[in-house]
Length: 446
Image (cartoon, rainbow, N blue to C red; front, side, top):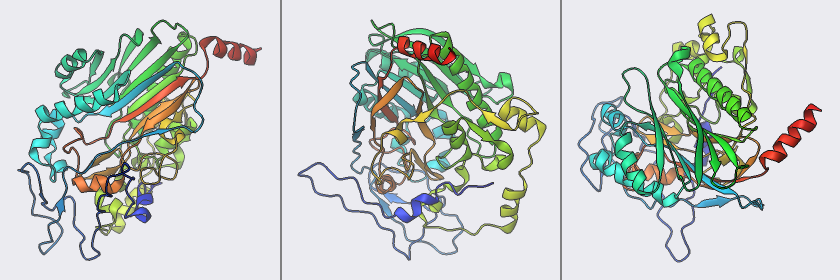
């Protein structure tokens, strides 16, 4: 069963931009003329700023289209959004999740960055911008995905007072997941690296870390860091990776006294997808869905999202989407861990941080998730999340950007953003002590 994952954006355009600080003029909005319908994947754009060495002049149009100009350095302002009734707890901490765009991937997939000045793609420039972003948020725990320059980053992070751990993907891949934390704020109690290849779930990896707040033994938590497989058609593998990560996180949580869990990363699934439903409700009947449509990624090309290029879809393609939904035993096993079970479950009761801390309609969809956490020539939408379990509550989040601000850049990275993703940042407060949680568990079992 397919899902038009990003159709929720179309009625909102053009979006009103977030209000600037008092005393500053409103930026001019961007509009697309009804007679101008460019194909984002096939047209070369002229831009101010550094020269873009990549261009393309071929595409589905038989005549030359107008060439728009993009402001490659629009004003990038991200604001903190706080809950209306914050907890009284003083035991707070901040986490960040960031797919930083691996240097090798940026070089290998140049077709994704046709509209990005080449200077903004170079690792030397992006590294500096990434560190400036991260240091500006001053998070206590930082989870990064698509890291292929770990030692380069580690040296800079250590100078800023962090220590870190790294797990590289298996196979021929050179990137992986990295977790950094402030040793004066958290003490590492245990860590676990997951190689999904061991379970027949491709070469992706994940990290699990158990932390304790320094000087407060009752304040512990499990932090998971994952980069789910990208391929949109491999929904069964995505589900299997998420299932296994949540299962291991629950085991670690129980071993350390039923402590809270935070799972963050690039889940390569949209908020309207069945995979998002699985994360938020803890179960999914996979028989009801076409595995090729589980992630919702197929409907998030910028031209589809922005409505500036509505390409016709072949009837054969539609038929394939809805008829090619048979699950083989191998696919069922990958998703659920068993060939006899079509009901997929995970043991954690998870909530999404950004969906919990409500934001503006300029930046959020109808269920509270960001309108977009990633933007390049072939994708505009949300795939990154911060999930949390009982025992902690988010007190504020760093809001993302309105779609019109993102489209002014022509694509990420840009002058002030070092990746093709936006980082997600949240502050949490412990809502219960470990003793309270254990007492509550004892009462239930009694």
